[in-house]
Image (cartoon, rainbow, N blue to C red):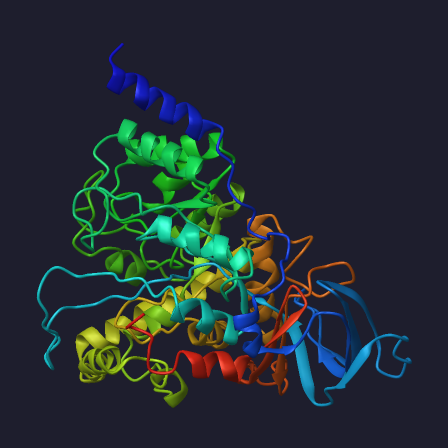
Length: 493
């Protein structure tokens, strides 16, 4: 056996025994430099006279006092009960406490289109730079306390970022680091490694499992054989695989054993005309979604298949909302976070979308969006696990954290009640990650990962935008200070 082959075998053997860092690492003290962003130091804290939305889908409970003891929730008691001795009481009358958001399609990068102009034209290659400073702060400031990266462009960077956050040296959510995109020939961005065979897919998964990633994501041009090899290897390491697919249809992916499918029902290609095996169709799922009406025979069969095989679906409505003319709001608070160049690029593309209002293309975008909303409702009604994330990519208008809030608002637009939408964005994500005993809902003994908002999201879901304090492991971060620290920098770093 050659030295090179011996080295490769040794590397795979080491990878096979690698262990992913836990998503919820034991809390560590925050560094002195970062204390400026802390409003409430960890200790015994009583959040008095608050409304509690517990994340289970139950109605909001009025006038409660939530007790935090260090990194854990100690109890939830009626507001009329005396605050126990030794607790610092904060009167939060009128405010709501809800679980920290568990973002299940979140990224730590931004798309850059070189030399974009007012017509939307740009030059190749599309580049995906890391936002390792601004993105984690934006997520946490807006209430995301745990997130899955759902496809990494620089997995070593993301793993290092997780290590620094877990050690208290950087600020950000708990991270489920997804390995590099498992992608075949024809990648959307130039940084992607090209999978060339099932064995290459297996090696890629084995290597990154050994490096400590928590999950994997397959992408648009992977073949069925490559996806099967990736799923089998990931499952060998007790890790899950999700997919933003195109070359592989939803039914094919279910048969291969996939755990999760991204983007609701937007990227299923099973009914696309001319769909060839292992090839991404020209329509990339658009014809299928236009044809697959909620409660149609095709929809009923697909949803039964997904539910029977326990395949979760990730709703990512904010990124698809951007394609519907005049649907997405233009908010100053999001624009303030963006670099001048990122803002200019987004406004070019937003105006182009708006110009499609009333056109056939614009009408089809609205129809696809409407169909997906109905299919997501039908999936949940059938017993499917719907999880949520914003996918901050597309035309640049979906911003970390802000997009997670918008996802909850759009789930309500889809027909879910506010407390149901909050459950999808919190407890359902924790359930998928296998962490529902620690995060995702409010109960004694669970992690003190909480959001304090000024208002009542149970009555008006838009109040999720009014984040005041974000508790992560019992540390109360000042949302406004975190937002100020990245003002004008998202898209830059």
